[in-house]
Image 1: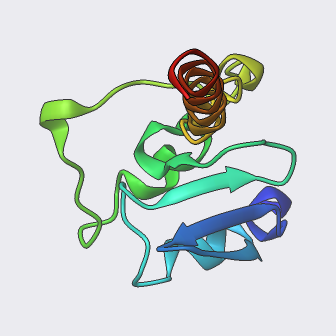
Image 2: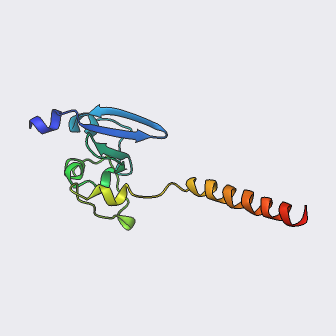
Image 3: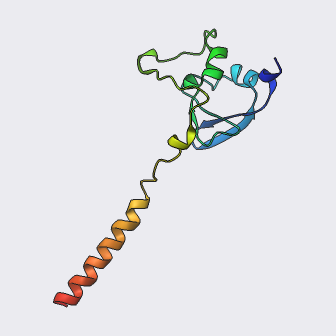
Length: 113
């Protein structure tokens, strides 16, 4: 029962990271649903609450919390997050594109300029 009051959960609503919250705090917060992004204190990324087995069991019996069963994916709370956190930032490629354009422009200038 002490686990229910341990404040180790964070939520992400929009661009705001809020917390820490306990499981009891999350259960009675009207902003929380199965699509709310959550992470535990030592997790590097947020995932939807409906995919966290550790939290899902506390929300299954709630009438006011709905879950879209059509696209539910199971992710255990002991997932290797290093694989999920290794996603590349799409903005890093803009740097390489600018370098290539600069070099191409410089070469064209040296040839025809």
